[in-house]
Length: 390
Image (cartoon, rainbow, N blue to C red; front, top):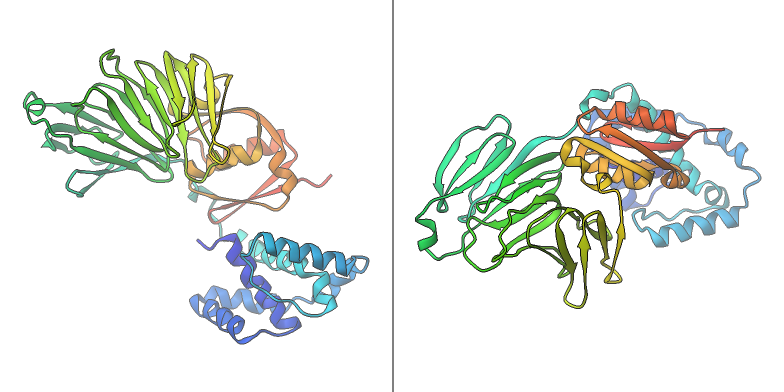
């Protein structure tokens, strides 16, 4: 899939070629893109047919200096677009022509999009054994692997189950496996101590095949819900990035720690946990949520409705007075989509709802459109968000 940034890049090159010409490196970049696909040549020829002078008449009252300064400031903050524009008229429409090009491309692609191609996630994962070999797991792979890494491992299509043998504990050697869940998928895991783990999309868990030490420790990247098997003699630890960990004695809780997100959070349904880093920690009781701000290394806690954070494992997206940007960020991991906001104001729209996790994205977005002042346009694997015109 071609990213929105790529479309903007190419659209800008085509417009600049028509208005002021390209330098050698820009011409080479455009040539490479044209040779990638016959469809690119069609897009190119149609964009060249557009008379930009007609559209420029709508922008006669724009302050060219203000427009140029705003555009340059944007490029300093986001250096994805390496263009140098010349001439007063181009300065006035530097941003406009980019939008014009990308809007045409979206309209062209619209008739070629099958909305059913964006489907909910499924049960799928990769099991990485201690020797580095990989077993691919999904709803159709039902084989039973006997005594791998000292344990009998059963794959039930959506759940991986570890059953240790009596001889394991005499070996006195820690052996680790990893379960990797790709974007647009989920998987369940039962560890050798009986702890149940639900791994959400784009998540990774490293764990011992069997626990031999006084502590039970696992490492998580992404999001997972844990039902920890009680064991007063051996506390359970979930190690996260930024030296953050969650310590458990016997409880059920949700942990979210994605590398592309600013915060790490733990939501406790039952029991008692302690979350913190090397310098500070917070003890959570049932119904509380702890948030660790990675940049500031600041840890706070509050009382919450836990269903808002744990309902994903039960097949629902539940949100209450939540920003649209946050909602679509969650959906993007499950439906394997990209999100582009054509209006920044749309990011701050507030929604509440309870939607089945296994519905198609079309039904979900339709529900949001009906309840809010926003439109969604699906182009290939990108959802374009626009404020409705009043």
